[in-house]
Image: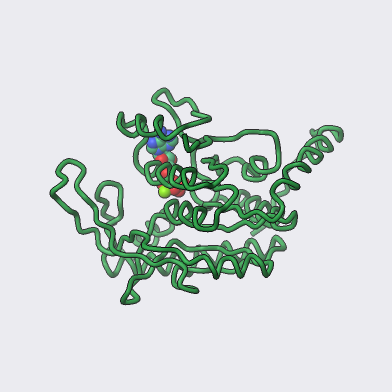
Length: 300
Ligand code: ADP
Ligand code: MG
C-alpha cells in the first residue's frame, strides 16, 4: 500500500496553527477515555481512506485516548461467496448464514479483514491486536430469533446469525491498559462453541455500553442519517428515530446502526455519532475539533 499524503500547501500557516490549538481542550477532556469506533463502508475499501483511518487511530492512542475498533466486512464476504459460486440470500435485510456461509464469514472477517486492519495500524506506528468474540470469552451469543415483519407468529430460520447474550470486556481492557489497540471482528460464540455472525454496528454499540465508552463513532458510506428529501439530520432523539423508522425513511443497514446508536446513548455513552467514512480524517475532526460532522444521536 502506498502512502498518499494529503496536500495541505493551500492552508495558511495561521490556520494550521489554529486547528492544532483547537485540539488541546479536547485532548485534555478525553485523555484516558475509551472510544469505540465502528469501521465500515467505503472507508474500508479505499486505500487512501484506509491509510487516513489507521493514522487517526494511532494519533488518538498517542494523545492518550483509548480507541477500540470494531470492523464490518459485508462487501468482502459478498466477494468471496461470489468467487465460491454461492448466492447470498437475505431475509428482512439479514444474511441467511448456513454452515458453509459461516465458514466464509469467519475466514473473511477474522482472517483477512481483521488482519489487514491490524497490519495497517501497525504500519502507521500503533500496536494493534486482533480479536474475535472467542478471544478471552469476549462475546457470548445465541441464535437470533427473526420474527416476520408482517406476521408476528412466524419465525424465520436464518442460520448462524447471532444475538449477543453477554460481553466480557476484560480482554479489551487489559489490552488497552497495556498500550495495545484492540481490533474486534463481529463474531460471537455459543454454548457449544459454535460461531455466530453478528451485525458489526450491534457489537460496537454493546461494547461501547459495557466499556462505558466516552464516544461511539459509527463510520459509514453516507453523510449520516438523511431525511426523505436527502437532507442531513444533524441531531436525532429516540422519538424522532422511531418516527423515521415507522415511515420508512430509515431502512436497510441504517436500522441496526441507529438501534445500536440509541442503545449506547441510553446506557450512558456520552456522545454517539454516525459519520461519513468517505471524508478523510472525519473521525479525528469529530473528536479533536469544534467541527460537527454527520448525525449525533441523543438519548432523549
Ligand atoms: P455500513 O457498512 O456502514 O454498516 P450499511 O449499508 O449497513 O453500511 O448501512 C448504511 C446504509 O443505510 C446507507 O448506505 C444507506 O443506503 C442506508 N440507509 C437507509 N436509510 C437511510 C437514511 N435514512 N439515511 C442514511 N442512510 C440510509
Ligand atoms: Mg451495516
